[in-house]
Length: 439
Image (tube, rainbow, N blue to C red; front, side, top):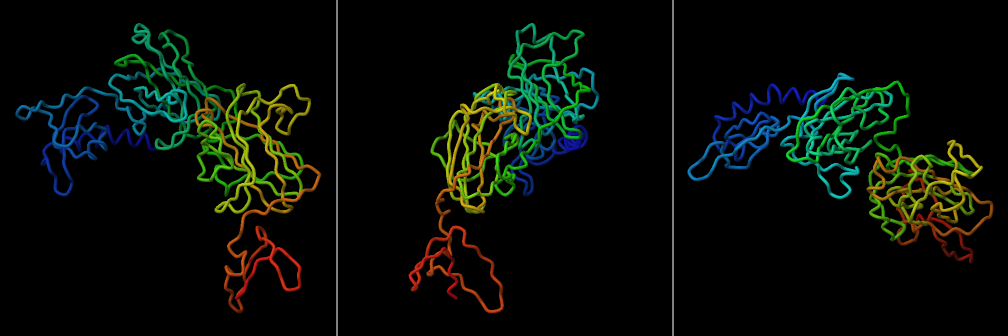
């Protein structure tokens, strides 16, 4: 496991390497400038390259710095700091039901992505742990008699994914620190996928931090874990929606932001994560509506945008942005997901579809609203109306005009289609939709 290997490296080879580096020159051969390096124990080593210090789990103090005073320049003073101060150095928790000691004293700030604490730019000083999911509901809690006396508050967040691409699973944005009594510590719970590594961030708002105990417990409650990455995060991976009346339960959890021009100028509070669906046109009007299941009990800012063309050359068809409300739980029409939806307040977009053409539907929500502890699921309803309509052409193809004809050679088979083509005039006076091959 990555974090375990990293922890062992810091504990054994890393410090030995730094000790050896202490006798090196201030300017190593081809290695660049060096300086003082503080270790988690509070030890200071001179003449260490920056990368060597970082690889050894230390904190680099800057080029040309020194542990001892040099002339009138004071030396670096190193304070002990937690070995698991960085996500990459997370301490693995392998024993459940046991309290493990930890400290946030002298921990540095961490920017927590897509969680409650990050919403207002709050960067609590915290430490990291890791645990492997059991396929059931898991609970984590912390306690600290020392911090209770100071009136401190604790921050707990659970992530999946790599340290450089964290996805927030659950978060507690500042509860009063518990007293360390005989109760089981259960501040936060999440549905853990069997075998998946989860990263736990612990922080306190009491300066200068302090000692605490952390406890992780699995339960026998089976659950359906949400994916760490969205399967339809990209247009190329759009989930196909069938014809007729379709109701889809979706999520933007683990989704990223697509680099696609928006169909609506409304920013919708910094819309970021999006997921994709596709539907085949019927030659009539198609309606797409969006609402949030009752389980989330909130409203959000979101968008529904419709495109035609190819994923690498999308053309905007229609789009709408605004507030997305909770689905009407009193509606007597239950969806195929088992969740009810209603006729009022859904975010809705309609467009005239060309028969046989593929359309791509992008669903997105505002950045902080789409974090895992705010929005987990949405319901997308797509319905084909019976009335026929006159669809607009989907952009202009490169080979649409004779001047842009694609050259062809004998004995070679070329593939093409007339989607996106415009009408061309012929001597016989008729007009047809075609693509010219003048070669």
